[in-house]
Amino acid sequence: RPRMTGGRGANSFGRSMIEMLGVLAIIAVLSVGGIAGYSQAMEKYKMNKAIGDYNMLIFGLLEHEADLKKLATGVAGGGASLINYVDSAGLVPQNWQKLGDSVISDAYGNHIQIFVHEYGKLVIDFYLGGFEAGDDKVWRKSKAFNPKLCREIFSNVAAPLHSTLEKAWMYGSNASFFGDKFCSKNVTCLRDITLQQIKDACYSCEKEKYCAVVFWF
Image (cartoon, rainbow, N blue to C red; front, side, top):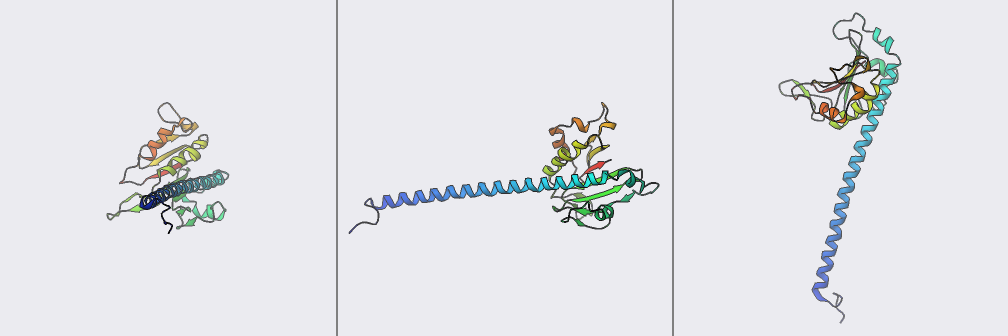
């Protein structure tokens, strides 16, 4: 009667099992690599989408900068929020959400404040990952703070606006970068900012303080 092992007995069957396990191991490695690659691609897509949304918002605001700054003339106590304005003007993507009159959340849970300072500065705060308070009720950097998105904001939003911004800085640290009109030998200029300086800024926030990317126009 013909043998089921192909004439080589248990050794042939054993080798087949080892080969099968090897194939399964290869498939598993490829699957894990594919999932990791997909996750990285999705993260990059989300960051690019967020950067595009931020640029659209800023360019829309700058078209009306002079009129917006007049809203806070003589107003004490921090100026005037522009959240309702940007919402009614159609500058907010549909998948963003208002969290009141002073804060808006983008599609990825980052909280944004837009207001005119009492001294006439147009200000945008990016609280990456949102706000977070501990048991002691002290506001801190969110655990969802994304340093990669922070670097993208400095590189692809702030730096191209070097001729328009007064400064871009990290609230919660001393990292500040100044626009063309406010540059000097004693400060770091946005037009000259390096990737290492951006990386250092995004990792410079102190845990016991707010951590936000702030634009002053």
